[in-house]
Length: 307
Ligand SMILES: [Zn+2]
Ligand SMILES: [Zn+2]
Image 1 (cartoon, protein in one colour):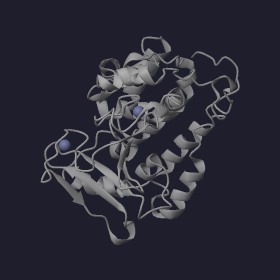
Image 2: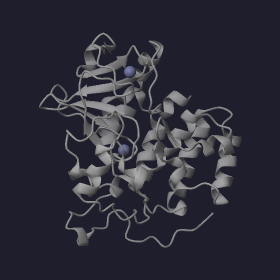
Image 3: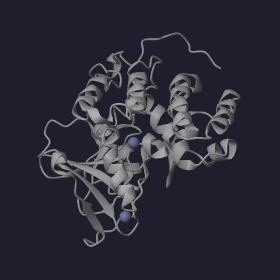
Image 4: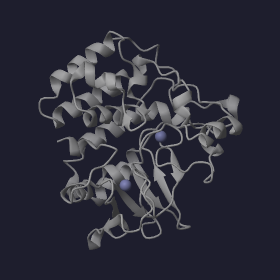
């Protein structure tokens, strides 16, 4: 296993050269604690997520230098329908992700019976340098390279959760300088304009607009409320809302009859005190169970659905 090049200044370091405010670690611990207090009945089931959140907050390697493309460089990609990561090369070292990835592998092994040998093959290939961080990146229609399946013999949903559990601390700061270049007119696709990952959650904001969230890089983008981000249908009869119970006012499941995908949606005009998209998504497994029971699937895997 490669060793880290010293603890470095870590993600808490400021970057005085770009004039941005000091970046802080991806620290969702307080949000997660608040969520658990609200949904105490899920405490045990959500334990692994709490450990992932803790690992992210404690991630100590220096994050990759942020992508410094200006507005024109970003727009040129977006106008072609290309997410930035498809043409960028973040300097994420395999050794820097190793601890995060190792932790997520343990959770996945515990969740999916029989996955351990495949995960061991994957870890061995990682150690030999045959696969690295870029193999976890999203590509059209998938998250994670086909090579991961070849080397491990494991299914795609399980492998893609490895990306969700390990990439965010590196990818979120990588796009920090490019976020401001995005406006709602330049990107109309249902995947993340920054990394290309599928929509992970949907928020309805104060102004009634819909914002989709990417859990891989923490990106967000405006998207039509009456459109399916997965297949693009705008037929009003294709989209159904699976209503939540009384106590979950403000939350809904938006499902598509055409492609059978669903996304959880939170109306922040109703739930003004709700937490960030990832926390709300991971913290509401009962909606996933309901959606799956109704015959729908989600593009972005959760740990509990691997069980
Ligand atoms: Zn993204
Ligand atoms: Zn659809």
